[in-house]
Length: 263
Image (cartoon, helix red, strand yellow):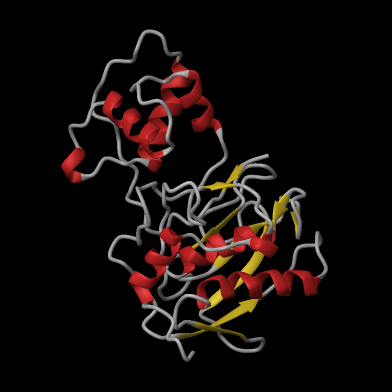
């Protein structure tokens, strides 16, 4: 079973409309509305692409997901559009968020404010700790858990609307979201508690999703490299043998540099 991670849309542009175009005769109203909404949200028109046709925008989406590039809403493309997915735009290779936000310090704190009932608290603590290690192992960053004081990265589990403007939508769709570095919600990571969280390949593996979300907390956007942790689609790999891809490594080291040999 595959899912797509939902990450915070805090840096998304405002809703963008299509240029006026005729609806292809072979598409139903629902099909057209779906592709319109999908492309507006995940492949938004930028200043330099304001005059891009619907066909070209579908081709852009197909290239990102390594689909057959036709410019048509064929069955393969429609199936991809229907998948649960992340709320930030998709771009090629590793990328940082617009403006390349990053933390201006190397020692970051995190706080877990509540827990899922799906796992023992110690299992959650361990998954979160190991997820941060994915990034500290290849950069000078250090992460320290705090309990009774303010933290840079606040982690919690929630259902539906939970006060950040990006409500979850129930089991099987969006999994989690995280905010790019900054003040307030910046860096925070929220996990949909309607999902079934696990430490194995049953349902959704917490460690893998958390490692992805913390990439966003540190300033990475999505990658279209299939092997990358920051690829939007979730797929299970054994956490015991997990290795960060070269694409992810280059992205995070662009922001924070390499880990010194004597660290």
